[in-house]
Length: 420
Image (cartoon, rainbow, N blue to C red; front, side):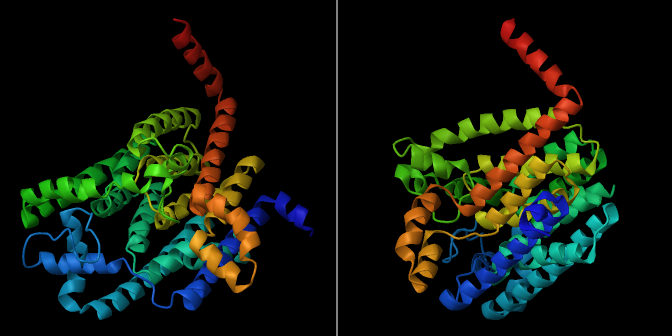
C-alpha cells in the first residue's frame, strides 16, 4: 500500500497519527535522558504545601512554587506527607501515576472496542498512545498530578457515555484540584445527562463543605485573594514576552502580534468569541451519536482552555478520551484528517530551547532555527495542534448543521435579528 493510499483510509490515518505520537513520546524520554537527567518536578509544590498545612494555615508559598489549588485539594496529598519523606513520596507518586495511566489506557481500549471493531494493531496504537506519547510520559517524569487528574476526567466521560451517574461525580472531584472542569457542566446540560449533573453538584458541594469544615471558611477567602489572583500571569505575555512551550491560549500569539496592548484586554475578547462559537456548535450538532457527543466535549474543552490565561501544555492529556474516540468514529474525511493532523502536531511538544539543543547536537542549528525560532516564538506546538482540532470541530458542526437543516434555520434567525 502506497503512502498516499494509506492517508486516504481513515483507519490508517488514525493508526499513523497514534504511532507518530508514540514516537514523539519515546523521543521525549530520550531527550530527558540525554539533556535533563534530573528534571524539575511539580510534585514538590503538592508535597510541601500538604506538609506545612498540617501544622498551621495553608502555606500558599511553599518555597518551591505557589500552591494554587483549593484547600480541599490538600486532602489528596496528606497521605504522601504523612507516610513518606519527599524522595520516597516522589517515587511512590510516579509509580502510582504510571499504574493509573496504564489502567486508563486499558479502559480507553475497552470502550472503543465496545463501540467499533478494533483490530489488534488498533488496540496497540490506542494503548501505546495513551501510555507512551509525550503527555503521559512527561507527567510521570515530572511527578505531575495531571495524569491522575486527567484520568478522573476521562473516566468520568466514559462513565457518562455508559449511562453511569458516577461520571459527574468524578468530574466534580477533579474540579476540586483545578476548578475549570466545572465549566464542563455545560456539556452535561447540552447532552441532557441530568443525573450526572446532579451527581456532580452533590459531590462538588459536599467536597467544598468538607474543605470548609477542615480548613475553615477564611482559608477559602485566602484562596481566592491569594492563589486565585496570583495564578493569572498576564505579565508573562506583556510586551511580546511569552513563556516558552507552556501556554495553550491565543493570548500568547496575540501578545506577539500586539506587544503594546495590555494582555488582560484580550481575555474578554477571547471569551466572547469562544462563547459565540460554542453556542453555534452546540446548536448545529444534534448530540445524537457518540461522534456528536465526543465533538461537543472536545469543543468545550478547547474553548475553556482558550479562554483561560493559565492553561498549560501538559493538561493536553485531558482531551485524550474524546480525541481517541473521534480518530476512530469520525467518517468525514476532512474532519478526521484535521483530527489526525492535530494529534501529530501536539504530540511533538518542544520549544525553542529543546529544538536548539537537539539541532546543535547534530550540527544543523542555524538552518533549523531559521524556521523554528519564529514558529515557536509565535505559539507552542500543542497550541498549533489544538487549533487544528478546533477547526475540525467547526467543520464538523458545519456538516452536521447542513444535514439537519439547522444551518438554514440559524441563518434565517440571524437574518431576522439583523434586519429588524
